[in-house]
Length: 241
Image (cartoon, rainbow, N blue to C red):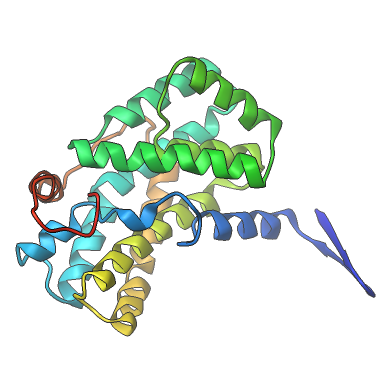
């Protein structure tokens, strides 16, 4: 429980609400990890005419969440969350998460955001366990993938895993929609329609990731990897992936 006191008001807030506020901040577009700079291959998909409107964007995002890196990342997040106090296992997961990307751009996307995520959480929400782990990662010169950073931060702050997974996947979906809007493919209202339509997919993927075998790390979206490869040499582009 957390007690908040203001002039004439004393309110006790359940810990789960306190945790949700942290997750809302950490997965917000304003959280400074540079998520806005990445489209996860969507920019080339738009260039190639594979994604052209709200319907095709919805299909692209749903497939990505259910069968692509976000699904795999959610399992890695849960794995790291549960390994907070097992340093050797956590280091193995961190190394694996940084390696499990199909292209150089996608690998850069996850480790740049992961490093920024841990630094920002440590600065704004200090926690001794995170400081100790950051020192271990620095000692081993290990770049931290985003799902691992989110997992250990949530675990260290006592935030429940199901909520963490849902917010994490919602952030992925929201960033995909935001990239589509900035590519002038859809408007703001259509973007919100797509986000709303993806809610059941987010909830289902989060539940499956929580219950999944932690070694069931597969991805089956070759078109996304192909788009990312083509994007690496795309002449005019807004995004880094």
